Length: 388
Ligand SMILES: Nc1ncnc2c1ncn2[C@@H]1O[C@H](COP(=O)(O)OP(=O)(O)O)[C@@H](O)[C@H]1O
Ligand SMILES: N[C@@H](CCC(=O)OP(=O)(O)O)C(=O)O
Picture 1 (cartoon, rainbow, N blue to C red):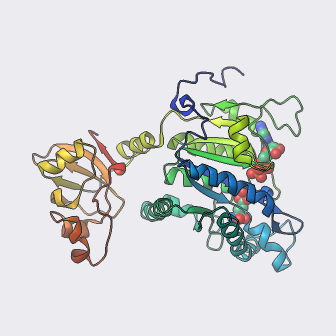
Picture 2 (spheres, protein in one colour):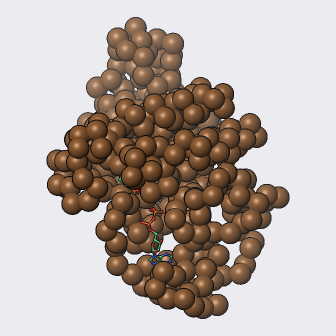
Picture 3 (spheres, rainbow, N blue to C red):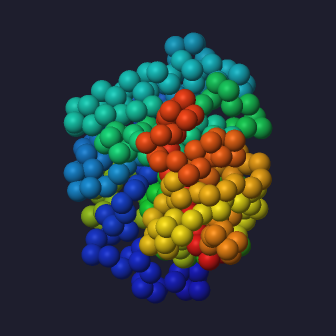
């Protein structure tokens, strides 16, 4: 077992003064149906949610940004349509979700307002996290909500999600959301306090694994088979979420959600399983841009822009002298200097048509030139890698 649990605590994730959770600037918290909804009555456990809201308010008060990914729309909505607890067909689940989602959002809105917070509903499908343009739109909305101090409350958009485009479980949705917003940490609040060497419900001697730094086949085998029930997840989807997090630099915890104040409790007791990636979200994102994306065009920049990029700033339209290729917003493009030498690569905020209209112009002129107000930058520094 020792080979699976790396005791080295020199990584930044655990090197800070606080816990891996307290040290995170951006945190995603996933709340499953079984925790949130009283299945018999089909109602939200308000008293418990109050304590979660209090924990989140405390995190925000010390400067952390928090996004909630919540399930529960089906469990809340089902009763209002007279549908039974189990055995629902996909379209019945979708109908139940449509009936419950408003009630769910309302519960968050009211509970969070009681703690001085503004909850904002965000509904996503798998496609929204895969298609780069929709991905950028969703990311910008979330960034804006966080900038204005709101707490995005995300669920799957069940109405339009057919079998092929469903996440089906919010564990993976939460991991994709974490990846999308460059979250430092994701906490999956669960009915269990972590990953065990085997399912503790069937194997009495199973032991909790406090830290995982690599998803080996041995770790995967511990999760066993997916389980049907209220929640669709089980340990299998939690490990799928962990895989996404490991690749995008987000550390992930599986922690017990049942007690009151589960986040405060996690910080105080430290009891959970942490999945610790090698990279930070920033490095992981830059590796993705540098490596995997084929450039669809080229932006030539002047000396001033080249200097600004080397100083770690964004690329503004004013510094662009010429544009090559046909590309869409969100595509990767190369950046070349006056002599044609490659300076870097980045995700462009305008398509090639609009980019050529605003190239060489001041950011303040974008609205007049295009008739809409897009991003101030042609390539934001977070979407930019030099020396590729
Ligand atoms: N190796 C394992 N370690 C911990 N739990 C496991 C393991 N294998 C299977 N499980 C089961 O997974 C369950 C957690 O999944 P699930 O109930 O779907 O989570 P939630 O509804 O909290 O999202 C645990 O209660 C446990 O019975
Ligand atoms: N969108 C569905 C999510 C279902 C789901 O993932 O449930 P869970 O395994 O409890 O997180 C709902 O709100 O009911």
